[in-house]
Length: 353
Image 1 (tube, rainbow, N blue to C red):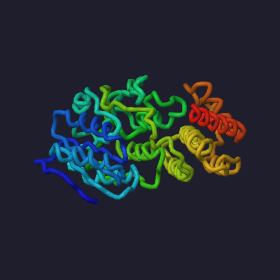
Image 2: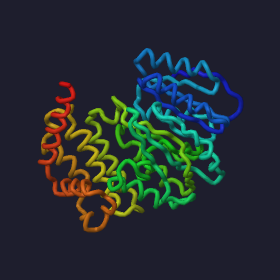
Image 3: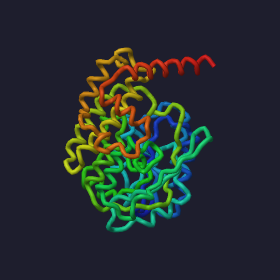
């Protein structure tokens, strides 16, 4: 790892970690610029995870040269979690927040930071979302949480994301952004990111974080503006490693004995749904991954044997999610074949336009 940095005096109050890999330079500049507008002692740690585009390399060089609060760390490509681990190891601040390079620190972020107290290890904040196309907005609020929530309630909300979808507190709790973490707590608890996971790695890490402390606070002010629908986003690319990673997450989830079996299985249904979209019906997947045998081998690794609908565990889920649960529970593969054909046809149509 190579560091290029300008020295700053004293320990920063906050480290803002920005992992970068071949992101459009204008988005990186916008993200870093929003962070530097915070009026408190900060450092921005840019981790260039082996970017290969010259304009990206030049952009992060320029940002590190233009402001002494910006540190640039370069490493060979290790993936998103590898870049996050590098930032956590290098952080000089008392607190750490993670900012994706295509997001922005919100204008109300200073209000969030007022909630940092000596008896807090993790601060959860609200966030806003805006479409990359410029045609929509979303809100991710924590209105159902008190300022000092019970950790079990927060974990239960994260695990119920199948019922609530993206525009919800469940989604917000499950991601790493819009949060501030005490650096000594993370390091002292060994809360490093798992570099073998390529999807749902945020949720897996947050589950470990939330089980490691009860010193959790909530701010209802917006901390981050999240850019969704970014073309070429890594979350939309086909990657067969998702299958083994989701099985491993399900296995680890079974180790949380304080979480009810219904909630553990509800999140496994979410993992299966995610793999259906990202692998088993993905237009770029090889033919064998579209087959019944590959899907059922994965689905059966994530045992879903409880009647969650009858037990009331699908409360709040829209009808489409309830029907998908039935497809998953009954081990039906036919609907996946139909979805695969539809996605292939949609891709051909877009390419022909």
